[in-house]
Image 1 (spheres, rainbow, N blue to C red):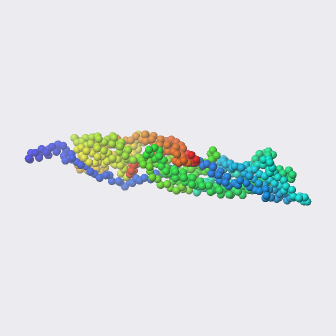
Image 2 (cartoon, rainbow, N blue to C red):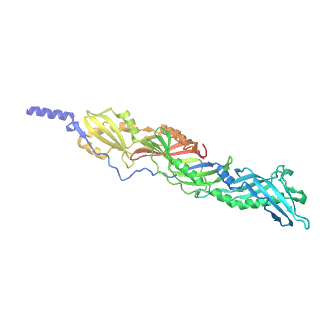
Image 3 (cartoon, rainbow, N blue to C red):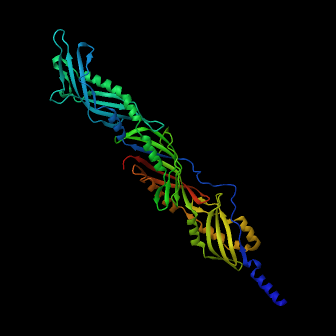
Length: 470
């Protein structure tokens, strides 16, 4: 009996001791003092010109200008001849609007009729007219002009004034001469029309200020804040938080204003992200629109894909050291919460249970790769290994996982460039769309967040935010 016990002890010693059947069950890595939370992206600028149709201005002026002015029953005494009096009546044609030379221009053709009365010293009063017979009435061409601005509360502001009022042509067709009294009434009608339009200018300014462009801007503000699906489970979130403008100009007859959106954009991989849409902020004037689009964006990749790639490379493999063997049954990558990732390895063989490795991912710009060069056993796992299975550290498991966790960034940057380009050409709503191109994507940093690996990039390109009918 005693000799049998000695044999057992010798066999155990030959196999390396009691830790041959070690079971490892260390606690997960404990987060350090540094906390990595979502939502700490710096604000980025997206300068985009916004086209707003002149139709809204046209409709306001069309509604504000009466279709007729004056009356043939309302006489006006002439200051240079107290025996003469005139009455005129104007009918307005369709309103035409355009934006040019930094100003909004409104034009219309007016048809008019004139009646004149003369009270001679002895004889009864006599009258004559022009434009009241069977022939075509004379016409005036009126053009109003105004600077147009967008105030802080998203209201259009104008200061309408009569720019020119003149006969529609230089022909006799558009002059009103009352030959029986030897007077040319054209100038009198022009003066009356100018006075009438001057009196109407404040009314037109008021109507323009009541145009509800704010609702339109609120609509597209909310729209561009929504996640844009680039492809299955890939989303572009612009996250705008403020807006500035650099003035208003015209293009193709429409109003064009350059807005600089300040945003915290990111690319999200996974389920449709929830977003909190801030209210449309006031407009502030910006000194310059900037050159094109330059955004700091963040690609958010869940740890499931990294886990899959590591398992493809390492799971099922066996490692040896000093005559002992372990087999990796599976790996699980997660975030520690302090900028590090944790790799859980489930083992079988001469050691069973779980070990945890930790690393701080980094981007190697020269190699264009994401690395985990400092990957090593977590301190609490190392304590367990020292106590019962120190040989595990000599198997090459760490170097194999390090090697498998070298991820080339070229494909990721190419993919990001394509996806951001898709985002820059997205139909956000029937009325709002982005149109442009992404030119370059550079990786700035890689950070391990609690839920995902966050790859911060700078995306450059050019884009227009188009607002108007689809």
